[in-house]
Picture 1 (tube, rainbow, N blue to C red):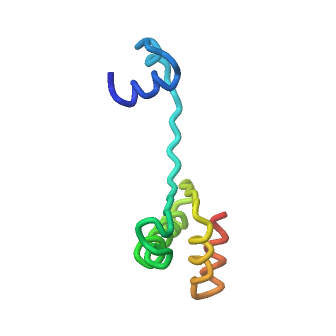
Picture 2: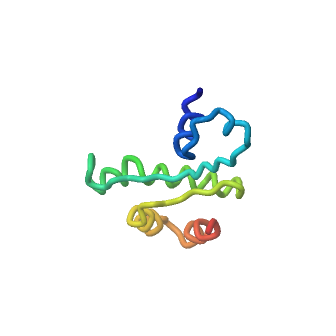
Length: 97
């Protein structure tokens, strides 16, 4: 039994391989989570990781509207938004919502 199948069987309370014959829908939701102050300071996380991550993700979202992304760290998002250099960049970002 594959690990994913085992996890589904355990989660569903089933111990039978019969439960693997029915299709299931699996949804993957791209997201990020950063614990500011855990391993790095807020500023270190922002400058070394978060700003590059957001830039990359938002560029991809502009290219293809079928993608979604969840931001769990609103303080980082606020800083990224305020750090954008122009109103047109802010408008582009707003258009993704």
